Length: 143
Image (cartoon, rainbow, N blue to C red; front, side, top):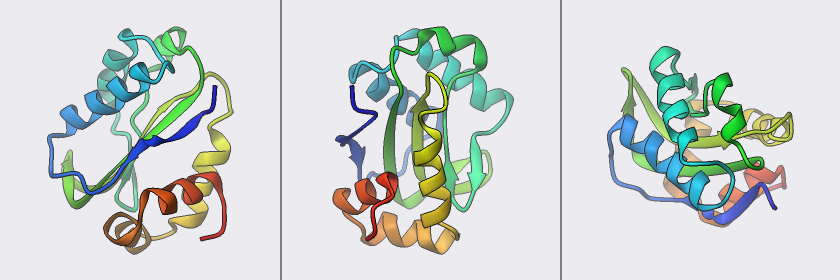
């Protein structure tokens, strides 16, 4: 199963509540066959115990270690919020939900760090980019 599908990249989403966004990411991971329903609760618990906001207006919600058993295969979903959302006091524009079996997701996360070095890079992608732009960035392709 491919880890990243274009249909799991959503652009131009309206403002939403942080927990609702985490649940939406989890639902997309479940619906795509990457994780079981139980994994969604692990994602909420993880963010409530230690924020998954990593800076540069990006959040990477994923499940706590105990919920790794609920991962079927590695998958990633991405949601873009041009107006930003409040992530425990920090504005976030790009949310990348992760269900990772092993280290397979690290290349994609490396691409995120390499391509989106500043908050301005993130805002530009979210506000001006397309699903294809997002896909290329996550896959490490030149834009």
